[in-house]
Image 1 (cartoon, rainbow, N blue to C red):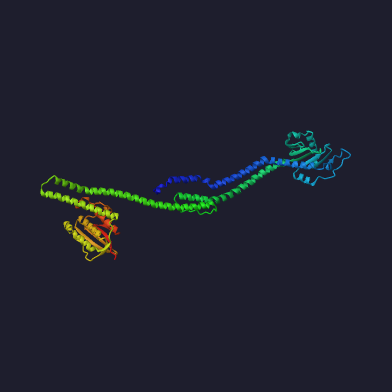
Image 2 (image 1 turned 45 degrees about the vertical axis):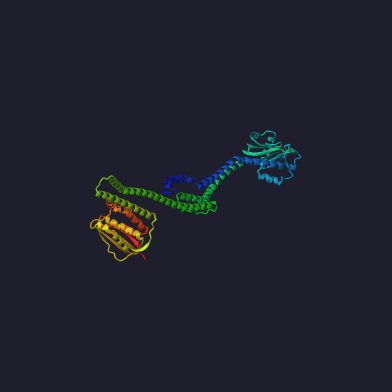
Length: 528
């Protein structure tokens, strides 16, 4: 798999950021805050609703319990001793000799109870409450017992037994709601116990108002506290969210730094480890990818070079093969019986065969050099003697070209290189100079000392090389003037061989244009 910068699409990433912006008001912090505040509102609303709907009923149920307890306590008193008698009913009337127990007084006061107890003859009674209410309660109790009171029609029975009745009734005289318990004790005495309800309605309204005010304050304070707490809780999560976004953009420099003191810190540490691991993995992957891309480029380059090589070789061999075939067929068919013509035919065939042989040898030499199979053998030798030896072997070619070769060096100059391969370089440079002579037809060879190296130059007079052709001179089969190259039998491989030889020795080479000619050069190591 090849990972390149093009595989990270930009449009989806922008879309993702827009999506996050749309979700800005749905972050975890806002969700938690809204949830808790909503719960507070719901709680306050529920309490207010329950308070309004059920508080009065609950209060009435508690009043019923209080009335039942009061009934039980009053039924156990010794009523004969505490009854009060009307002063105008009998001669044996007497005042109460005992007071009501303190426990009953406290319970009646605490529970806001008013009660009256009457004997069967309705001649004696005991009353607890306001002084001016005793007569009215005696009348009301008399009306209840005899089913004569009009308020009984508007009462709501809460509980009824064989000995008592409990109801909620509206007293038209007092203009108030009461919970009353009336009936007859086992000893025959009648009783009426009542407690007002008007205060509970006011209390419920006040309670609801109080809950609303207090609830509003609680919501405001709780909202602030919730925002602070949720911000502290969600800050590490927000940091992890930002970290994940940077990691998705292949930015691995960011690190989790918060300290939440819980599992989020473990998650953050894992994010940091994952970030480092991803960075290392992607770095390795990019290295492998770069190597793979280079291998692919090299393969493509090799394929192109192979194709170019085959095309060039085919082109170079096509002409000599055609000439050899043509002249051989002429000899075979006895086109000319003239001995001189037959000799010319044979010379052409041998000349073209020699060119083909030279081309094949050069190709083999170049292939060995480029593949590294023909490694240079470094040795110390005199470059001056080598150049003179090359010029001596090319003496005939120099005379044929009517050239003047200038080489004035006489003192030995020792260098480190492969002597056989350097001889081939000097031969290629010199033969190339002789084949491109013009003007004064001079070739000048120099050996220059430069620090720890020696620079060998071969200059020839003639037409300078076009600047656009100079970078391609060292490519295989490249020819500036194809017609002239064909004339002297060149194949365009000589300078490629020079390049391969000099580079195998880690030295430099090049070419320089002058107004009156061209100079090729290379360097050699001359350190002791």
